[in-house]
Length: 215
Image 1 (tube, rainbow, N blue to C red):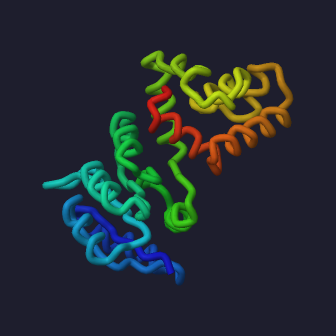
Image 2 (cartoon, one colour):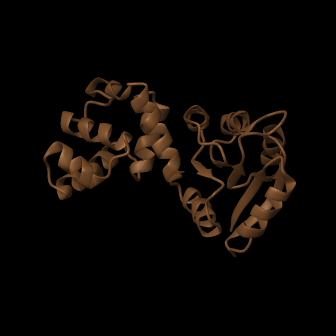
């Protein structure tokens, strides 16, 4: 059973999310909070597997709440569920330790799948969130900071080039076309990068790059 604490200052929103999540027999909502400080206190009391919370809340917002929780309970997974797709908020949330960042326009099945995926150890980001971050990166002209010197020596120049393209939001087919390689080569190289960095998927790679200031 996956235990979840919800945090949203709109009670009707929390009750609706609770109803959706508990429609799945593997998920149990064990507490409701209205701000980041309340959810931290519930974490001390209940030690949930997952915290699912909004960003914009009074007293202590979701980013501040994430910092409090991760500083004391690193094993608790945090999913931001919000209507905000501003790149600064996304980056702040990821740097605060959030394991997922989803927008409130997702459907119930996607929400349940997000909770289960994060519980299994994956990092999950809404596709529009990834787009927003990569647009921010491109607009500010900082993608070039992803260089060989920023990674462990095990990552070679070709892999760095592929990582740049992933951060820019490109799919394997687009990367292959850009680098004049086969799509199969790109796929195999990405698998090798993930293995070297001990990451599970492309999303974790993007988050790794963001969290470590490599962009």
